[in-house]
Length: 173
Image (cartoon, rainbow, N blue to C red; front, side, top):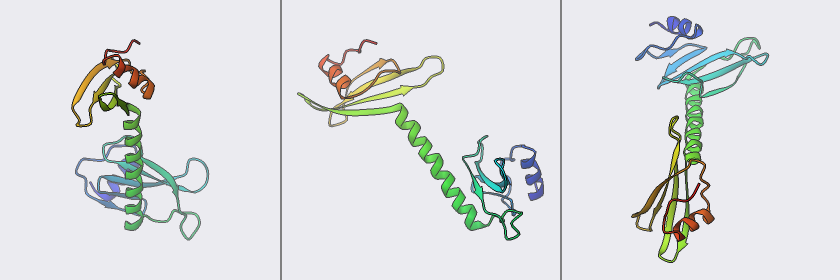
């Protein structure tokens, strides 16, 4: 696939061919598993750039793009801008993954008579059987208990202490 064919395919919304060669055009760069494309800004005047990771349907990043010297056309992409865009888009994806992880994995540490106990809640967002696993480990990482609970279980110091005090029996819903 030539650079022009890749550009035309992308303008028509077709997917990139696996293993396609790097493309370095003023409005389209494909390299390092990423595609940067300068597009007309949908919200008004000017231009935007979108960064799409290979294999993804949606852009990881869309942002304003600088106008060229003629104040009509966009500034061409270059290696420095592309590398900065890759770094920024990668950071956006990393933060999104961290946010999802934090949403589905929570923990608190409780001082119990037997020592410090780390209580974890791992939510399994299964489409057909959503649930969560409530677990407890001692200071050495030894698992003390694990029970299945509702994905809506609220883990906090109070609920963790109550579970420990109840000898790790499954909390009532």
